Image (cartoon, rainbow, N blue to C red; front, side, top):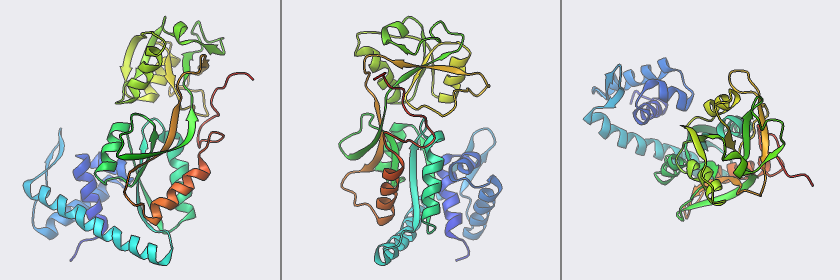
Length: 312
Protein backbone atom coordinates (compact mmCIF):
# COMPACT_ATOMS: atom_id res chain seq x y z
CA UNK A 1 0.00 0.00 0.00
CA UNK A 2 1.69 3.18 -1.22
CA UNK A 3 -0.80 5.82 -0.10
CA UNK A 4 -1.40 7.44 3.27
CA UNK A 5 -4.43 8.12 5.42
CA UNK A 6 -3.69 11.82 4.99
CA UNK A 7 -4.11 11.46 1.22
CA UNK A 8 -7.37 9.60 1.82
CA UNK A 9 -8.52 12.47 4.03
CA UNK A 10 -7.71 15.01 1.29
CA UNK A 11 -9.61 12.92 -1.28
CA UNK A 12 -12.70 12.82 0.97
CA UNK A 13 -12.56 16.57 1.58
CA UNK A 14 -12.34 17.29 -2.15
CA UNK A 15 -15.15 14.86 -2.95
CA UNK A 16 -17.49 16.35 -0.35
CA UNK A 17 -16.61 19.96 -1.17
CA UNK A 18 -16.76 19.61 -4.94
CA UNK A 19 -13.63 21.70 -5.50
CA UNK A 20 -9.97 21.84 -4.52
CA UNK A 21 -10.40 25.43 -3.31
CA UNK A 22 -13.29 24.65 -0.95
CA UNK A 23 -11.53 21.52 0.32
CA UNK A 24 -8.44 23.63 1.04
CA UNK A 25 -10.51 26.10 3.07
CA UNK A 26 -12.35 23.32 4.88
CA UNK A 27 -9.31 21.37 6.13
CA UNK A 28 -6.80 24.27 6.10
CA UNK A 29 -4.40 22.56 3.69
CA UNK A 30 -2.88 24.16 0.59
CA UNK A 31 -4.54 23.53 -2.77
CA UNK A 32 -1.36 22.08 -4.36
CA UNK A 33 -1.07 19.55 -1.52
CA UNK A 34 -4.62 18.34 -2.10
CA UNK A 35 -4.15 18.18 -5.89
CA UNK A 36 -0.93 16.21 -5.47
CA UNK A 37 -2.60 13.77 -3.06
CA UNK A 38 -5.47 13.13 -5.49
CA UNK A 39 -3.08 12.64 -8.42
CA UNK A 40 -1.02 10.19 -6.36
CA UNK A 41 -4.13 8.20 -5.41
CA UNK A 42 -5.32 8.05 -9.01
CA UNK A 43 -1.90 6.86 -10.14
CA UNK A 44 -1.57 4.33 -7.34
CA UNK A 45 -5.08 2.92 -7.78
CA UNK A 46 -5.00 3.09 -11.56
CA UNK A 47 -8.38 4.82 -11.75
CA UNK A 48 -9.69 8.29 -12.45
CA UNK A 49 -11.51 9.53 -9.35
CA UNK A 50 -12.72 12.92 -10.55
CA UNK A 51 -13.93 14.68 -13.65
CA UNK A 52 -12.30 18.12 -13.62
CA UNK A 53 -14.43 20.91 -15.04
CA UNK A 54 -12.93 24.40 -14.82
CA UNK A 55 -16.23 26.21 -14.32
CA UNK A 56 -18.03 23.53 -12.31
CA UNK A 57 -15.22 22.21 -10.14
CA UNK A 58 -14.87 18.50 -9.41
CA UNK A 59 -17.37 15.71 -9.84
CA UNK A 60 -16.78 12.09 -8.89
CA UNK A 61 -16.54 9.40 -11.54
CA UNK A 62 -18.53 6.17 -10.91
CA UNK A 63 -15.33 4.60 -9.57
CA UNK A 64 -14.71 7.69 -7.45
CA UNK A 65 -18.15 7.39 -5.87
CA UNK A 66 -17.50 3.79 -4.90
CA UNK A 67 -14.07 4.61 -3.52
CA UNK A 68 -15.46 7.53 -1.51
CA UNK A 69 -17.69 5.18 0.49
CA UNK A 70 -14.78 2.79 1.09
CA UNK A 71 -12.43 5.66 1.96
CA UNK A 72 -14.82 6.93 4.65
CA UNK A 73 -15.02 3.45 6.17
CA UNK A 74 -11.23 3.13 6.08
CA UNK A 75 -10.69 6.50 7.75
CA UNK A 76 -13.37 5.74 10.34
CA UNK A 77 -11.66 2.45 11.21
CA UNK A 78 -8.30 4.20 11.51
CA UNK A 79 -9.78 6.79 13.86
CA UNK A 80 -11.24 4.01 15.98
CA UNK A 81 -7.72 2.68 16.54
CA UNK A 82 -6.81 6.00 18.12
CA UNK A 83 -10.03 6.06 20.11
CA UNK A 84 -9.52 2.53 21.42
CA UNK A 85 -5.96 3.30 22.46
CA UNK A 86 -7.08 6.57 24.01
CA UNK A 87 -9.83 4.90 26.05
CA UNK A 88 -7.47 2.15 27.23
CA UNK A 89 -4.64 4.47 28.21
CA UNK A 90 -6.86 7.33 29.43
CA UNK A 91 -5.09 9.73 27.09
CA UNK A 92 -6.77 12.25 24.81
CA UNK A 93 -5.83 11.84 21.16
CA UNK A 94 -7.33 11.50 17.71
CA UNK A 95 -9.08 13.76 15.22
CA UNK A 96 -12.10 15.75 16.38
CA UNK A 97 -14.50 16.75 13.60
CA UNK A 98 -15.83 20.01 15.03
CA UNK A 99 -18.70 21.95 13.51
CA UNK A 100 -19.42 25.59 14.25
CA UNK A 101 -22.30 27.85 13.25
CA UNK A 102 -21.13 30.28 10.58
CA UNK A 103 -22.15 33.41 12.51
CA UNK A 104 -20.32 32.26 15.66
CA UNK A 105 -17.20 30.91 13.99
CA UNK A 106 -15.19 34.15 13.49
CA UNK A 107 -15.32 34.85 17.21
CA UNK A 108 -15.25 31.54 19.09
CA UNK A 109 -13.81 28.92 16.73
CA UNK A 110 -10.14 30.06 16.73
CA UNK A 111 -9.75 30.26 20.50
CA UNK A 112 -11.78 27.14 21.29
CA UNK A 113 -10.03 24.90 18.77
CA UNK A 114 -6.51 26.25 19.24
CA UNK A 115 -6.62 26.18 23.04
CA UNK A 116 -7.92 22.60 22.99
CA UNK A 117 -5.18 21.44 20.60
CA UNK A 118 -2.55 23.22 22.69
CA UNK A 119 -3.75 21.58 25.89
CA UNK A 120 -4.00 18.11 24.32
CA UNK A 121 -1.13 17.73 21.80
CA UNK A 122 -2.31 14.27 20.79
CA UNK A 123 -5.63 15.70 19.58
CA UNK A 124 -6.21 17.32 16.19
CA UNK A 125 -9.23 19.56 15.58
CA UNK A 126 -10.73 19.43 12.10
CA UNK A 127 -13.12 22.44 11.98
CA UNK A 128 -16.07 22.89 9.66
CA UNK A 129 -18.27 25.99 9.40
CA UNK A 130 -21.90 25.82 8.22
CA UNK A 131 -25.43 27.02 8.94
CA UNK A 132 -27.45 25.32 11.69
CA UNK A 133 -29.40 23.04 9.36
CA UNK A 134 -26.23 21.77 7.68
CA UNK A 135 -24.55 21.19 11.06
CA UNK A 136 -27.45 19.01 12.21
CA UNK A 137 -27.37 17.01 8.98
CA UNK A 138 -23.62 16.40 9.27
CA UNK A 139 -23.92 15.38 12.91
CA UNK A 140 -26.64 12.88 11.96
CA UNK A 141 -24.47 11.40 9.19
CA UNK A 142 -21.46 11.15 11.58
CA UNK A 143 -19.42 13.61 9.49
CA UNK A 144 -19.12 15.73 12.67
CA UNK A 145 -18.48 14.55 16.23
CA UNK A 146 -19.82 17.66 17.96
CA UNK A 147 -20.86 21.17 16.99
CA UNK A 148 -21.15 24.61 18.54
CA UNK A 149 -24.45 26.18 17.56
CA UNK A 150 -27.71 27.65 18.79
CA UNK A 151 -30.87 26.22 20.31
CA UNK A 152 -32.60 26.72 16.96
CA UNK A 153 -35.33 24.13 16.38
CA UNK A 154 -33.14 21.25 17.56
CA UNK A 155 -34.91 17.92 16.81
CA UNK A 156 -35.37 15.32 19.53
CA UNK A 157 -32.65 13.07 18.10
CA UNK A 158 -30.02 15.62 19.15
CA UNK A 159 -28.77 16.71 22.56
CA UNK A 160 -28.25 20.44 23.12
CA UNK A 161 -26.28 21.62 26.16
CA UNK A 162 -26.58 25.40 26.67
CA UNK A 163 -23.39 27.27 27.58
CA UNK A 164 -24.21 30.99 27.23
CA UNK A 165 -27.16 33.26 26.52
CA UNK A 166 -26.99 35.97 23.86
CA UNK A 167 -29.86 38.50 23.64
CA UNK A 168 -30.48 40.19 20.29
CA UNK A 169 -29.47 43.79 19.64
CA UNK A 170 -29.84 46.23 16.75
CA UNK A 171 -27.02 47.46 14.51
CA UNK A 172 -27.32 50.87 12.79
CA UNK A 173 -25.01 53.28 10.98
CA UNK A 174 -23.60 56.12 13.02
CA UNK A 175 -25.51 58.44 10.68
CA UNK A 176 -28.82 56.64 11.32
CA UNK A 177 -31.59 58.65 13.08
CA UNK A 178 -31.53 56.11 15.93
CA UNK A 179 -27.75 56.06 16.40
CA UNK A 180 -27.78 58.38 19.43
CA UNK A 181 -30.15 56.05 21.29
CA UNK A 182 -28.92 53.34 23.67
CA UNK A 183 -32.09 51.24 23.46
CA UNK A 184 -34.93 50.76 20.99
CA UNK A 185 -38.16 48.81 20.70
CA UNK A 186 -39.00 46.36 17.93
CA UNK A 187 -41.98 48.54 17.05
CA UNK A 188 -39.69 51.52 16.44
CA UNK A 189 -37.30 49.38 14.41
CA UNK A 190 -40.11 48.06 12.23
CA UNK A 191 -40.50 51.54 10.69
CA UNK A 192 -37.09 51.15 9.03
CA UNK A 193 -35.67 48.63 6.59
CA UNK A 194 -34.28 45.37 8.02
CA UNK A 195 -31.25 43.67 6.47
CA UNK A 196 -32.23 40.09 7.31
CA UNK A 197 -29.70 37.34 7.98
CA UNK A 198 -31.08 34.85 5.46
CA UNK A 199 -29.84 31.49 6.75
CA UNK A 200 -31.94 28.37 7.41
CA UNK A 201 -33.54 28.53 10.90
CA UNK A 202 -31.79 31.84 11.70
CA UNK A 203 -34.22 33.81 9.51
CA UNK A 204 -37.15 32.22 11.37
CA UNK A 205 -35.71 33.32 14.70
CA UNK A 206 -35.29 36.97 13.64
CA UNK A 207 -38.71 37.19 11.99
CA UNK A 208 -40.19 35.49 15.05
CA UNK A 209 -38.95 38.32 17.29
CA UNK A 210 -41.30 40.66 15.43
CA UNK A 211 -44.14 38.14 15.06
CA UNK A 212 -44.35 37.66 18.83
CA UNK A 213 -45.00 41.40 19.11
CA UNK A 214 -47.61 41.31 16.34
CA UNK A 215 -45.23 43.15 14.01
CA UNK A 216 -43.96 42.59 10.48
CA UNK A 217 -40.56 44.10 9.62
CA UNK A 218 -39.89 45.95 6.38
CA UNK A 219 -37.22 43.79 4.77
CA UNK A 220 -34.69 45.86 2.82
CA UNK A 221 -32.49 42.90 1.85
CA UNK A 222 -32.00 39.17 2.54
CA UNK A 223 -28.31 38.29 2.84
CA UNK A 224 -26.71 35.09 4.18
CA UNK A 225 -23.37 36.67 5.19
CA UNK A 226 -23.13 38.49 8.52
CA UNK A 227 -20.05 40.51 7.48
CA UNK A 228 -21.89 41.87 4.44
CA UNK A 229 -24.92 42.71 6.59
CA UNK A 230 -22.79 44.59 9.11
CA UNK A 231 -21.07 46.59 6.35
CA UNK A 232 -24.38 47.45 4.69
CA UNK A 233 -25.77 48.59 8.03
CA UNK A 234 -22.65 50.73 8.57
CA UNK A 235 -23.43 52.39 5.22
CA UNK A 236 -27.03 53.11 6.31
CA UNK A 237 -28.66 50.70 3.85
CA UNK A 238 -30.87 49.58 6.74
CA UNK A 239 -30.59 48.21 10.26
CA UNK A 240 -29.62 44.68 11.27
CA UNK A 241 -30.30 42.46 14.26
CA UNK A 242 -27.66 40.13 15.67
CA UNK A 243 -26.85 38.13 18.78
CA UNK A 244 -23.08 37.75 18.48
CA UNK A 245 -21.28 40.91 19.53
CA UNK A 246 -17.73 41.19 18.13
CA UNK A 247 -15.18 43.12 20.18
CA UNK A 248 -14.94 45.69 17.40
CA UNK A 249 -17.75 48.02 16.26
CA UNK A 250 -16.02 48.41 12.90
CA UNK A 251 -17.44 46.97 9.68
CA UNK A 252 -15.31 45.39 6.96
CA UNK A 253 -14.93 48.69 5.07
CA UNK A 254 -13.69 50.56 8.15
CA UNK A 255 -16.93 52.34 9.02
CA UNK A 256 -18.23 52.06 12.58
CA UNK A 257 -21.71 50.98 13.65
CA UNK A 258 -23.80 51.84 16.69
CA UNK A 259 -25.29 49.07 18.82
CA UNK A 260 -28.72 49.44 20.45
CA UNK A 261 -30.23 47.27 23.15
CA UNK A 262 -33.70 45.99 22.22
CA UNK A 263 -36.23 46.68 24.95
CA UNK A 264 -38.91 44.28 26.12
CA UNK A 265 -36.77 41.19 26.84
CA UNK A 266 -36.86 39.62 23.36
CA UNK A 267 -36.06 35.91 23.17
CA UNK A 268 -32.29 35.35 23.39
CA UNK A 269 -30.20 32.76 21.59
CA UNK A 270 -28.44 30.05 23.55
CA UNK A 271 -24.94 29.02 22.44
CA UNK A 272 -24.37 25.37 23.19
CA UNK A 273 -22.96 21.99 22.31
CA UNK A 274 -24.84 19.87 19.78
CA UNK A 275 -24.44 16.10 19.64
CA UNK A 276 -26.45 13.14 18.42
CA UNK A 277 -28.52 11.81 21.31
CA UNK A 278 -27.89 8.25 22.46
CA UNK A 279 -24.49 8.19 20.73
CA UNK A 280 -21.92 7.45 23.41
CA UNK A 281 -19.23 10.15 23.28
CA UNK A 282 -15.60 9.11 23.04
CA UNK A 283 -13.05 10.33 25.56
CA UNK A 284 -11.94 12.88 22.96
CA UNK A 285 -15.45 14.30 22.54
CA UNK A 286 -16.17 14.30 26.29
CA UNK A 287 -12.90 16.10 27.00
CA UNK A 288 -13.64 18.70 24.33
CA UNK A 289 -17.10 19.33 25.83
CA UNK A 290 -15.48 19.83 29.25
CA UNK A 291 -13.05 22.26 27.65
CA UNK A 292 -15.92 24.29 26.16
CA UNK A 293 -17.66 24.46 29.54
CA UNK A 294 -14.59 26.14 31.03
CA UNK A 295 -14.30 28.66 28.16
CA UNK A 296 -17.88 29.62 27.34
CA UNK A 297 -20.37 31.04 29.84
CA UNK A 298 -22.75 33.96 30.26
CA UNK A 299 -19.84 35.93 31.67
CA UNK A 300 -17.37 35.09 28.92
CA UNK A 301 -17.69 34.11 25.27
CA UNK A 302 -14.39 33.94 23.36
CA UNK A 303 -13.99 36.78 20.87
CA UNK A 304 -17.10 38.64 22.02
CA UNK A 305 -18.01 41.59 24.20
CA UNK A 306 -20.49 41.08 27.00
CA UNK A 307 -24.15 41.26 25.86
CA UNK A 308 -25.91 44.62 25.92
CA UNK A 309 -27.92 44.55 29.12
CA UNK A 310 -30.69 46.66 30.61
CA UNK A 311 -29.65 49.23 33.23
CA UNK A 312 -30.01 47.96 36.78
